[in-house]
Length: 239
Image (cartoon, rainbow, N blue to C red; front, top):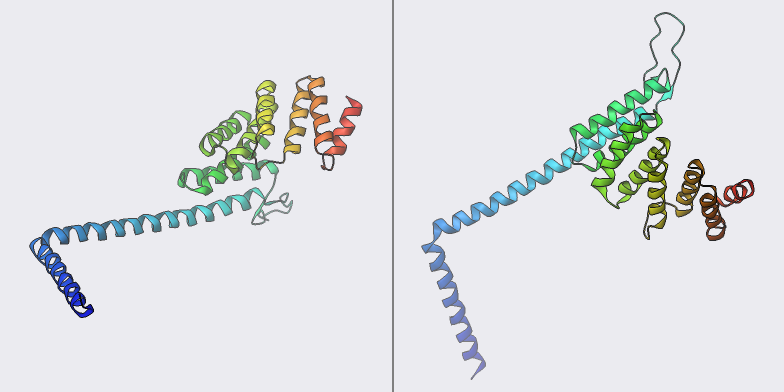
């Protein structure tokens, strides 16, 4: 078949196909318009959700930044001069600063619960509560974050915070178990030598001297260049 004839057949076939599609659309105009409207609606809703989430994340981030600044504010004892107010951005005592930080982090979590900022705020809140000696509240925050975040960065940090909280609360066995799990994790964001030192100290606090010595020895043997190696070696010589 000549090339010109083949081209002619292709053009005819294309014309027929185009005609069929045109006829189908013409016969189903309302249906096509409905589908188009649905597609446009989906795009609009999707864009709105994306914009809303982005906006929420931005607002949450700003609020978190304010809370972080509060937690890091300077301590400036009030002036003894009458009528002199507290300097802006400062607190008269560490207790006052801690209370303000706890309130600020709590507000981030309440106002923007489903944002990354809320996860960070939960960890910071747990840390502030721990430093303030509110162990039950700190444990609650760390547990909540650990459950939510799993093995992610903040989930792992939450477990470390939880172990420290449990240890201070006198729940030695629970703390040791958690430190042991963290030290044994194959992939972790935590420095293993640091976790081992915390585990050794937890064993000492629980009166388990031999277990503590075994962990200190691990630090010396497995991490000879660690910044903790000297302390671990000293601990072996005194325990």
